[in-house]
Length: 570
Image 1: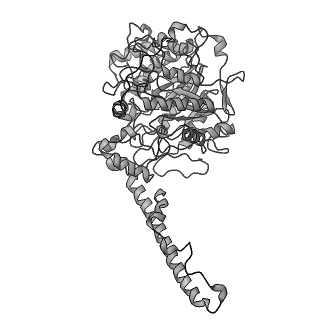
Image 2: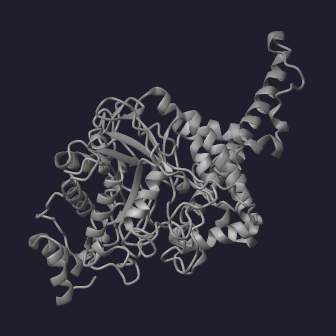
Image 3: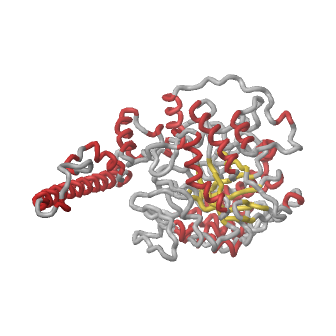
């Protein structure tokens, strides 16, 4: 947050004077200052855009599909390009390749859209950190503040006929992590309020309102609990507000969408499900419900799926400390955490899970579903096997999708850990060898455009990879996703109680239910014994009341084995 005189002078030269003053003021102490962004100048569509392509916009939803201005389907076949949401505040790759070359690569590989994450902090940062951009390769980015670099990325994507989904990924510039200060769309323990979040979005909606290829706003990434604040998704018309704060995601997403509709009337809204615990999309797609029919024709439901993630209260297996595998096996048996992650499911089980989570929404034709994050490590055989199952099922469900990520090389803020899921070469160009992950995406509809040069697409056969053991793969994932580890707080002293406060509650609650059920069954058995004895004594007076000495349902013979199904209560 450079606020010295030199920085302010350069910022004012790069931006309109009043807009520059607002950015510099916000950067001074942005978490303690409400910024209304009163002076916003809409950016204009460049004259060198393909006008035939631009004429396809704006997009809208029609039943389960996203369609263009002519009514033809526009299936999102996208890729995530992160960086503006992280510690460097600009998209990855600008330090090793020119912006236009990267955008040309995205187009030539067949992607028609980019999900472009940003952080609220990025909106207020002045110069990007040293080394984040190679200005010899990207001279037109020199002297621009982080938000203006983001603008240039959007412009360049438009020149290369790639639509953009603007995604609010984080509040603070860092990798989206576990229960942390980026868990919610606001900071309940700081000064970044929900109103500031909505104000930031409104500024961006005005800023990009004249750029038709900015087709959607992904309102917030991976919402999860933050200490005592557990987000919910309840219809605001019938839900009582959380007394601790505004943690109803349905209410917040509907309100911000209404505000943004005034600033940018034709944009789509992507509303993601809560990421933990992870549930299906039934409540979100309910009609009438929180989002529909209010946002009919405008709303797309978003969700993420990985080999290591799963339904409900999932815990990635790479996150489990090796010495505590026995504990997590027990927690899974008791269903305190989800017994199976997506990677543990065979094709049929995964099909049933996907159908339960989002397939039925597509079949009902209520609204589109966008699986906006999935990916796999090429050298991890288990992940690649899962990705193949997933790709076949995505082709079957015919859903929109976005691969995570485009990025390759060292991951900023992760102590040099390599990005394992990227499919480009280190210079951010296509590999000379065809990447199998691109072939799997081809099953989902990825297809290079007719004018893509063949030498760009990697036609050489892939050389045999040196696969890694399960332990090596888990170690690599721990290194890569270390800041995204849901048990991070447990592994560091000081926040164990806050991070897992729900565990003893769940265990005690489950045990109480089991004990109550056992007491009830014992009481029923005792009552039946007493009734049986009374009836036996009376049977001599009335033969109609005679009972067999003991029947197959004698409750006095209840054993622990009979009670074993109660262990599933949670």
